[in-house]
Image (cartoon, rainbow, N blue to C red):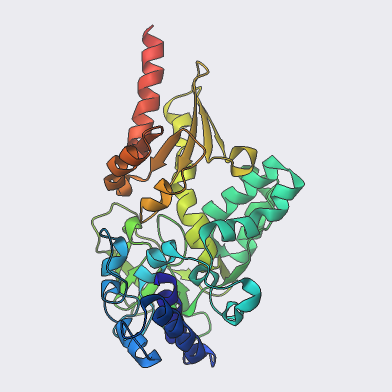
Length: 372
């Protein structure tokens, strides 16, 4: 149901430039009618579109327990796709059709119909097949840390920076999406974009607001249009302490597609954050994505104590509970701390932490060993 509603919302938001959009809305109406049964829920494509402007709890079957989906509205008042669609709803994606029987995959964005593990598998398939662990780690790190920028600079970093030694171009870099550009003049060079200070991907521009589409990053700004030869500037409106980014020229800039950003870059940020353990506790080693991502990290203390770690950033903790990771330690970002107790109750054989809690646990072990 959630996937059908999401696909219909994406199709509706693209109806001006995509002639197949209305047919997709009709197909998703059929899916929802099949699931809900006759006489329940929308019975025409027009009814479904109207429902997409309201919270999903009005459309989905009565839930057995509260869900993050309940309050999600997929379309804004202007008929555009909401940020919640890509932040929350796509985390619930399910396959509705086989890829050979789904004509909409030719034009729907991948994040609207693929699950995160499918995007990941397609992106790194060749590296896993070749068995090159160093290339796998460097290539994945590059997609996490460098999801957008001037294409010439990106190529130079990937091919010459020691941090990315051996990295291959596994992701396609596309033009900055139109909804993430701001034009402040008529000239070819008078169009700019802004990075999210957290994930480095282009923020959405809806004057007077500029914001990251992933709300937990807390990157929200007010746009001040430049005058007198001065370009546009941003002023922070959120309570986060993130830096205010500079405007960057659109010309020559590229970014990974939304599916790669949402399913690889965003969850990869807290994974890479584990490396701060090496700085905070000298002698500690952090190996990211060992054995082709069997788990996210292997942390080794100076005395040889090891922790296998999987970092999980899901809107719904049921995604973790229903498919427990291989690692012994499950770490969620600090902004998901409300999930910790539920996961601990449901997976008592695992150790569950916030990022800060896990760092403290490693530190306590190291300090305890030093005192002996």
